[in-house]
Length: 107
Image (tube, rainbow, N blue to C red; front, top):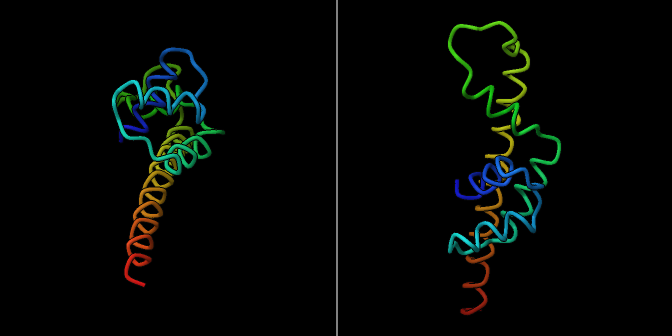
């Protein structure tokens, strides 16, 4: 989740959400950075309007005037889920690489 939080911090600060900036935020926070996860997240968020996704996630239960339509909410939720799935896939790939590296020690 810290990778998604980094993207949200960048968005709220008005900065471009890209690999370099995500890496900088994570390093500044003292986190160990997995470049594969950073790349997966940046790629997944390329076509996502983060502000719209945040608004859709925080939308009130009863629609107010000018509130996003159900279709817009669903689209934003799907994009957020895609970003999370991309992050999870990157984590799994990193774990698989670690396991493969251990196999080399005994092979």
